[in-house]
Image (tube, rainbow, N blue to C red; front, side, top):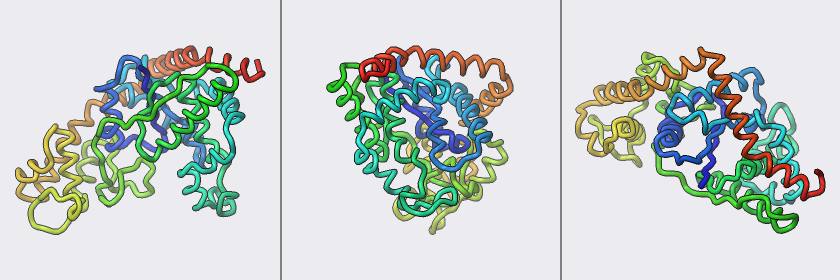
Length: 330
């Protein structure tokens, strides 16, 4: 059973990525599971090429430093030739209407006006429309049986299922038909400055975002400035006091505790914030240190990356060659 998960280097890895996904991948991943840095996915909107390249390298280092075996990681663009060929095959299998009704495309196209272009659908990059087909190629190329996704990505996995079935029926059996599965529940970390929104690595204002590579004093400063709610003592009430609830949930995730029970252990907001800062610093310390060591060893990180690319290419080569041959191109 192969599960495939990807993470997009749209910014520096943050605490929510770590507690919500990466830590779980490292501790609960199966022997055949695969994890990739989806740098091509970060190109659907305006970006700085040098920064994207740097972030992809950093993200790879973070995955390995977090405890994921180097044998199970790769960078998406390193297999761009086969991935691009398969994406084209799948685009020739997909109808325009199927891509255009993807919820994320409709929402982002409604905002429009990206990169100085006109508003509406005419103003967004074509890659935003075809991105779900690229995601289908990611899944089908590696022969994934399952793809753990949240509700916002389930529709994309359903498209991958549709395209796999259609190709197999029309041209011949090539692809495993994947299933979308809900991932194991991880911590849902909110922005410390604005607990009404998720912590995001691409947030415009990073004042409430703790990054995995932040130094301890930066972590402590951000948490001490975390927004709190009314009341004089900590209490776990997510609906009415989301700021304190977020702090308690982060502390619980780092200490394997219960947020409601933890609320009774701290007499004031200040004491709670110090405890959260201590726990987060210790949680991130080994990952930060190992990541920096890897980034400092250019030869080793390049070896890991090349080996991962070779394995990913080998896993998918027979599928893309078979698909091209059956569709009439090889």
